[in-house]
Length: 306
Image 1 (cartoon, rainbow, N blue to C red):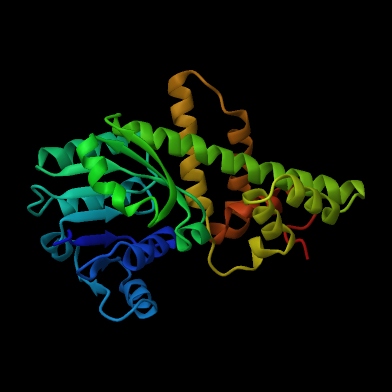
Image 2 (image 1 turned 120 degrees about the horizontal axis):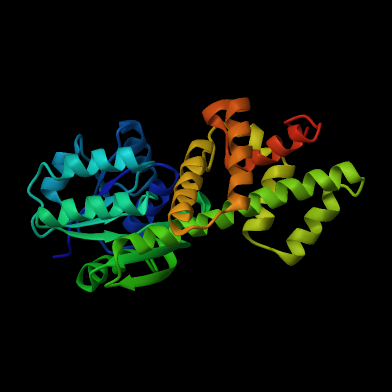
């Protein structure tokens, strides 16, 4: 019999990843799902074939039935609280796969707690936007003992991910170090796009020509973020895809790592400053693409581009 899986956390990324596990992982039992807001579990279950998911009312209930537990939550404090709830139960022989983006020190801390309780642990952060999670096109990074990583791998490449970076037998923290450095590339990309479009508008070139060049030279994430900016998606959408608070959390962790290594991330500092301006202007509903609005305001343009 295949292992029973339990999924904790149905945010923008978790919904897509868990749906792909249901659809592609050849489960012979319903996927157990839990979210603090139960309605998200109900919404997901209604979108998937009947009988493919089982909503549980507590972490304890899911852990008691599961062999493998996925955790993907918003920040370090929430992750630590979830792990504490998991470890109130008998977890001997179970595998905990931690997909959240957290500080490497937090990862090492919870890994030690999990192993002390007799369970296996894999640090498995993922790269990609929610649309990539929906399509099963993420990039997974898996670190930990090889036996644990091998146990986790069937749920990544070809299921939730298009590719994986296998860090078998590497320290858990390396997966999160890569994740945080990688996320600085995203922040820097958004910052450069925002500055470029503002310059194109104010210089008289116009944003359309710059966008055409971006589509030709940098198709993919650059073009997608450029489109989100120019269509006003960054200020029109009801729910952010990558919230300002999460973006600042990741930037803060990256700058913390850099400080420890004797490195200064000037670009990240600039992006984080614009995220702070974004948060002050629109509050927690701000999306990372709203950096465009912050750069616009800084240069005498209105926040909204329409």
